[in-house]
Length: 279
Image (tube, rainbow, N blue to C red; front, side):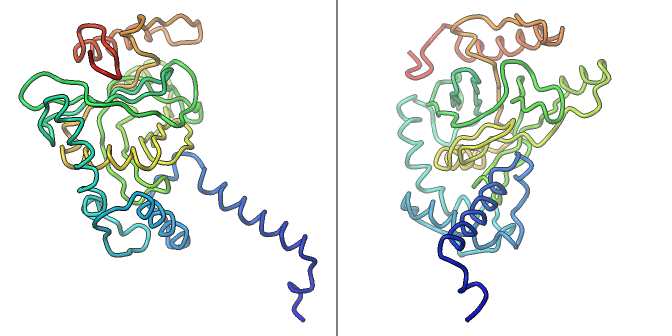
């Protein structure tokens, strides 16, 4: 009889729970986990992708690959037809061609919503919104590594990661020029980095959208071109009530930032309107 089989069943069950807990802890680590998965995690990563694909009845699944080997083209093959079919409904309703020429995502921290706006040859129109399943921090800009803040400002998508531990992820260009400038003035050397819009429902400093939503956002961004996608992140919806730096803990330049954010959002929807209906 081996040593393991001699243990009582209750001890073996406890060991199993500990191993499972360690595995989950690794998955739900900080947003730095958006680096391509390593070969050591190949079994769990492929299992997660296959389960997600089976549940949503994807059409064209690319051949299995080791973690770190998926490409953006593989993702378009796997999810492109399904995503295009779903988004076409919303774009047709908004009278915008698909794929559009430009896209803007408006992320509202307090409301936990991400709005999708797009245009072809005309003005921007509201397409649809998504729930933000998880984020962290409070109202106010991100200032340093480890503050767990979701940034606030006007950003761009600077990378698409088809091999994220969070299913799929899109990296925003935080810190941007505005962030760098004020950090330099205040002598802050480490503003943090690795801020993503990603799948699943756990996050530290990023926006977790869930797997199905990130598939739509990822495919749309790939089809439009990341250079044609803008990301506006606000503490709350300035169309509901004005953005104000009403805390002494906020930097003195916060009113300037909030003015920039407000103008950007109001330029899309100059008349106060429902984020859900666009009316």
